Length: 125
Picture 1: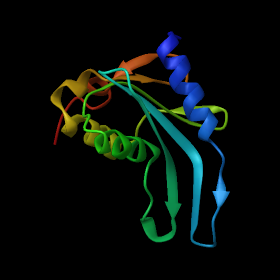
Picture 2: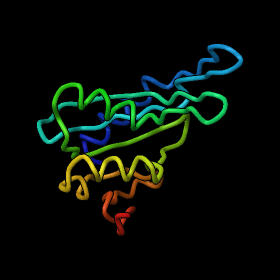
Picture 3: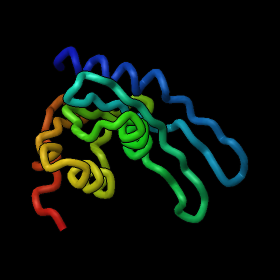
C-alpha cells in the first residue's frame, strides 16, 4: 500500500466510533478520507437514520472538500472496523459528477487492490 493510502486509511480509522445518538440515528460506524489534487485531506463519517435518510461517509468527506472550494479527488478510502469498502453507486456517481477528472480517482479496496472510479463506474447514467 502506498504512503498516501496509509495516511488516508489511518485518518478514516481514527474517526470510526459508532455512536447510537437516539432510537433514530447512529453515526460514525463508517468513515472516509479523501485526498485532493492539491494534497489536502478531507474526512467524513456515515450518518445512519431510520426511514432512509442516511448520509454516506464519502458524501460527508466530499461536503467538507466542497466547502473548501475543491472538486478533484486523487484518492479515497472508506472503512468500518476491520473492513475497507469501495464507495457505493451513489457516491461513485457524485464523485464522477464533481469533475470529469475524478474518473481517475484511485480507490483502495479490501484486498489492497487499487482501482479507479472509472473502473467501478464505467457507464455514466
